[in-house]
Length: 326
Image (tube, rainbow, N blue to C red; front, side, top):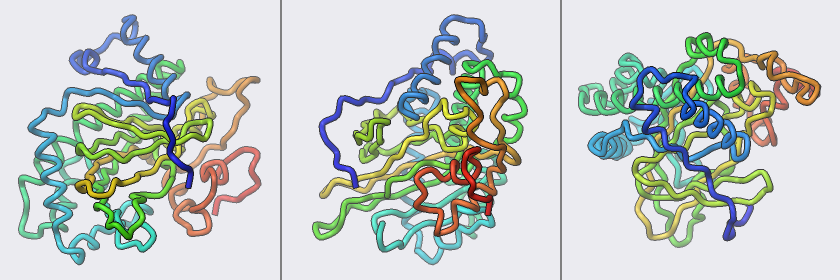
């Protein structure tokens, strides 16, 4: 496990307040163009950035984390009923080597049906407050992600593919809790990993712990304000961009004696095939990845023998890799 030292690395901070106020942003405006460049530059350099979005009110933010506490207070036998036919979508917890971590997944999380289906399993008697709160939040975060993705497509000059991408996107929301470690426990909240989605938007209560691995191999910690979010490229976006964007390793380390950390992440996954646009392939950037099915890639990674691959997407569909899609 890499050590954390005083680092010169600091994530870029991008404020989207003005863009979110304008419901029909003009892609020819200089401020929009500059923001697009800032987004792709951050994702190329660090694989993530701190996004400031003021659309989630203080009241909603408080309600979301109150709802998460109520969720994790449910009996374990209830939480383990969070199951899915999709790999990596259901309950995760009670794992000996990460005893501090527990999480639940909500598929189609920006839709009333997705939220209600999850709520019905957790609270068969109903919990309207939970459903309303989570849906209000996940819809706003989906809008954030869609704006960031639009900026990525426009920055790379492939906006003609944006509409089809948007239509194929679905969202998984993952609610996470990291318990406070006991004195005799490891303080590892979650192991070093990369995300396997297209774009992740992560938000937390005011307990830090997220650490990012920079391209030079140095780990550094991230501190977030209440109105800020982590926007991160997953391995699917890295492959789509032909390695222009970087999907960073990250982990969670807990402090002894602090309160529990709650976080909520929304992941975008594509239904069907993901393919590198031909505009992103040239002599300086030869094609690195074959077209791939996103959910089949998740199934590949879900196999125990593939969990420790340095770069799962490269092993799965890298042009120069001889591994077969299993």
